[in-house]
Length: 217
Length: 128
Image (cartoon, rainbow over all chains, first blue to last red; front, side, top):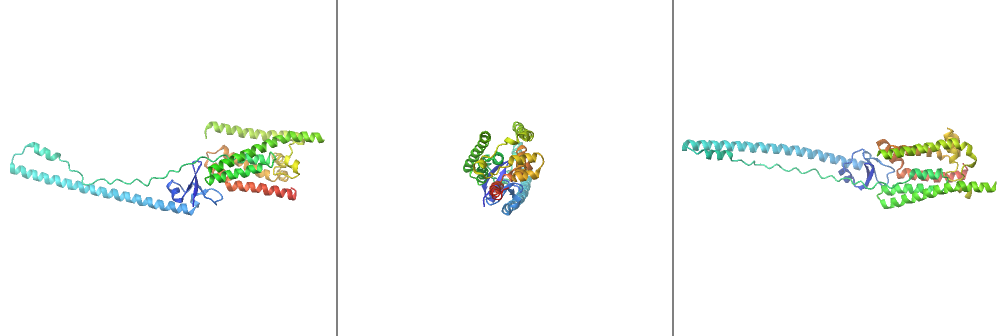
């Protein structure tokens, strides 16, 4: 199933349910798919909600994993510290034993030993970043459908030419929702031409009728 | 919405209101020369807009019954255009945006087109 969504006043799509969930869709995002009479909240579409749920479970698991990882790291660090401490203690004991047996030891020797840095035994594990989210690419806004104009020109200019304008306005929108921008633009232009024709005919008819009525009266 | 656009849209709304007002004030005197329908003049049939001016005038006078008798669609069209205009004036409000996308959905527009066509045929058949 292919879905379209409204993101920041713009339509985007088509997406699969999984892609939608990756775009950071919320249950309140308006969603539409072919065959649906109107936009609806994502919460009303079972497939999307299922994906969303799966994702939140996966996220919770990932979080759990992170916590576990941190705990293991901490443990390992503590162990390493402990080992280090023990090693240092051993070294000191050895040193002392040596000093006692030799009685005299150059100071530099001792300093050198103290400065020895024990490399920590662990390497912090690089956490894999959460799966890169696919940003929704808001497509171009819908070409003007001239809905108000087509209705005004049909009902007020009193010309039958306004009806195709309404039909093309409707086709502009549905072509756009289906992702066919080129077709949508063409219909938008056609709607525009029919509206212009309708208004011109309406405007022309007034003086024309006055003239005709004047002739026959 | 940028402030400039807001001003332009508000101005358009005021001009539309002024046009309705002047229609209300002038049409009473100009009833005789209200523009007639070219389609009706040529074919003798009613077009979807026939009676719209009488209906609009009746609506402006608050006479809904007479408006419906003149042109059944006009009261509905006025409500629809008012909703459309409100959504157009306040596009930033989520509720308005939702309303706007509902009433301009392909389904809604197809419904409107079909309604107008079917009603035009019916009005010619039974003469309303």
